[in-house]
Amino acid sequence: MINNPFTLPSRRAFLEQATCGFSTLALTHLFSQQRAGAVEVEIARPGGSDLRQRPGHRQPRATAVIMLMQVGGPSQVDLFDPKPELQKRDGQEYPGDVETLQPGSEKKKLMASPFQFSRYGRSGLEMSQLLPHIGSVADEFCLVRSMFSDNNNHPQATRCLNTGKIFPGRPALGSWISYALGTENQNLPAYVVLRDPDGYNNGGTTMWENGWLPAVFRGTEIQSRGAAVLDLHPAVALPEGAQRNNLLALARLNEERRKMYPRETELDARIRNYELAARMQHSAEAVLDISGETEATGKLYGLDNPVTENFGRRCLMARRLVESGVRFIQLMSPIKSGTMAWDHHEGLKPGLEALCPQVDRPTMALIQDLKQRGLLDSTIILWTGEFGRLPVSQKGTGRDHNRNAFSLIVAGGGFRAGHVHGNTDEFGYKSVEGRVSCPDLLATILHQLGLDHDQLKYQHLGREESLTDSPVTGAHVVGELLATSLG
Image 1 (cartoon, helix red, strand yellow):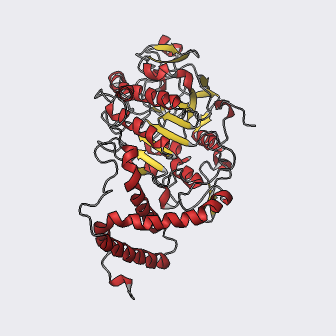
Image 2 (cartoon, rainbow, N blue to C red):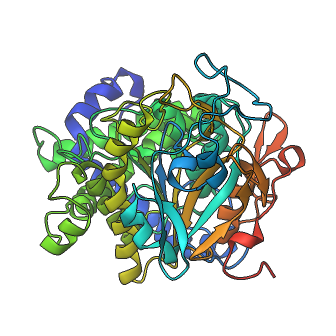
Image 3 (tube, rainbow, N blue to C red):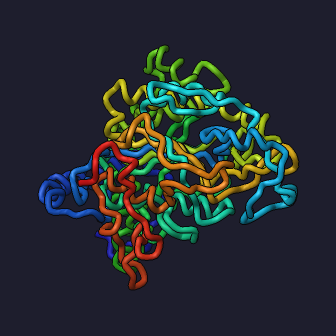
């Protein structure tokens, strides 16, 4: 019997040797879940400290979200929001006031879009010629043209879109959803991030942090190149008995530390992640291995084309994760054109011509593939940047940031299909009709997942925090975006 567990080797030493044997602890953990799980799931309410599946406040319309995050601020007037008056008055001075102008934009010189717009689908939805594949599924999504943000800078605007406010340290949307509902598959994380395998977008991991929610609800990065899950298998396997002894000793170490620091959620998250890693050994690789997909599916996502392969591979992995019960997948934009790929302060025309083909076909493929598999109705697909661009030129060939208007696409999950919501002014500078704030959008997504944004809360520093903080932000569910009335 070990009287003083702290005389044992460090946790790091055990972890280097004992990865395979986590299956033993995971099995014990699952047995305990089976004994208590049925009752707990039935009586639980949104919000918990683990990833066990929980019911929402009401019957959900959707059960999963795929967020296609386009970092940098895609230009709405060049992609989604045609403005005849802007084309007509190209080169003239913008007649109104512009909130913020960076160097190169001081003269407020209007710049027409260099791209043509076409009508797509039975709905006749107008979009740029740069996105013909997305346009081909126009009847499957809602195009929101009246979004606006609280800030004109990338970090703050990205946080506003992901966390409801511009301040750092707040939990991301995926973390709130995982906290509220847990996951349908105990062998995979609830919140998965698929970033570009070549690096991070601007903002890095801050876009999927858990903030002050328990650490288990942080986004888990999955690789789309090479081994999908790093360090899933040990380099050298130990005999079964040695693994078990090591793990039991490690468990005692962790339990002693848990008693010393009962409020240290990072330790609980670490222990649960080890248990999850053991379970993932048996299922994750099969889910994330796309080699068994048909040739037709590969072509649909553009895996046969180096331009689309990067984003297409991750879109296909997102579909497989949704099929396997993952609750929230955040897929980051390609970084071949930079960590803020859509941030075209200059060279907008060649920049969009290079970037749009990378995401156009894969986005279409994801929507189409989910529909033909019967999963689009229960999956929300969100294609969005953090803000838009100005109708005036910057440095003669680009556009500056614009928090007052941007466009996004939301498909599936009970959102109105083939529908355009809201309007901007005649130049596309400001949202003027059917305005939708970032907290409004988040509240509406939660609603479709069966969650009341005003009731989903977490006690932090003596205050009941929420994703939308509606008393401050005025957030509300935008019923006009939904296929059925709120009721």
